[in-house]
Length: 510
Image (cartoon, rainbow, N blue to C red; front, top):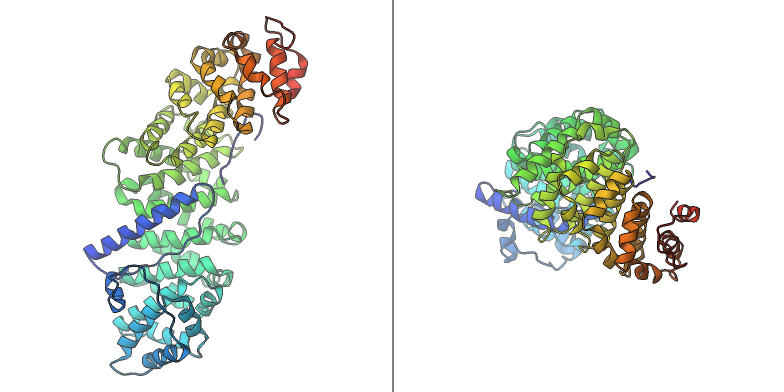
């Protein structure tokens, strides 16, 4: 999911009700998005209001409904087919009943069921149209691909109504489309020739945050599809979507964070496809996202909006992955303030949102991987002690901290001398006693670079009892070659007291 550069490698209600509903939805999404730390997350969303739950007597709480019998479903269908005053009531009852998976399956199997719903969805009666839209929205949330594919005939109408004047109706159509896209490749294949990308490109200029957030949801689901790199992303790049996505992400502190979070993940998925990074770089994505990170870091100590970590996470990933490209683009962002921003974010989210640590360290690794600018800046800004404090946070944090230190040490004697002057060695000794072979292996890599470029570090290491820590790894298959090579470098196996590197040590670390 991240590009890693290593050394030597490469809603129906209005007013306050709508706000509360959206806030609750965002709270649920916050928990889901945290699961997106290491992999893509394809999730569906429901726009429900408290009033639609009154019939079930649950005040809007999540309720497990009993499935209707086939006769009961048929009766509801007949009720909405009759042009009587009871049609609206039957439609509302159907919408409630469609929360049950079995009822959904029974409904779509009935002849003319979808056609009848489409007739009401396209009618001139606004209340009927909205209720039919809610029925399709419930169907779109089904986990059964057959239910999603039964909704194929409505996709063209959903796209048409995205240009409507009702914000609530447009939002409902967007989330319905997004849900259908998640479940069915057939739906995606139908939507592309129907022009979903040009329609979304038109909608992205909407002034309404609710519409933009829903649009971002649809687009993020499309961009996670397995066929996205070849069939969807090229269409997105040929539209005005990328520049508007970048604009909305970078104006998040003014325009609203909800839509910015969605579009930041969209940019992340595009970057991860490795098919569009040149185009994004040409739009100035790297300096723009870097400046955004500076702005976000400056907001944290003051009045940071809720959910800020959900925006910071994809922004960090976009920057990391763009830097991982072999384009020399790091020259565009040689600004030491970026390091200060990273450590401010680390300090602020360390306790409450520890997953941010890994994201920040990944970016720090990619910043320090090749050019010496950020290595020098990290040392001159005296940020090394703060970096070393992150060593015990987690297994991955330990690996990444040690990798960053390796990036610095690889730059040569002057850098190793500064690492030696800092309290690095005393912290590395406990790291060598950890049971995790990946962490210990990375620590051995760092020690090799320090000893190679700054022999005084090896002498101090011996005086602090480091040879004993190395000896315990001589019998560990994946570590023994490197441990023995370091013991040779410090001369311990032969009882030597001086630093004496030999050619065999280089092969152990090559």
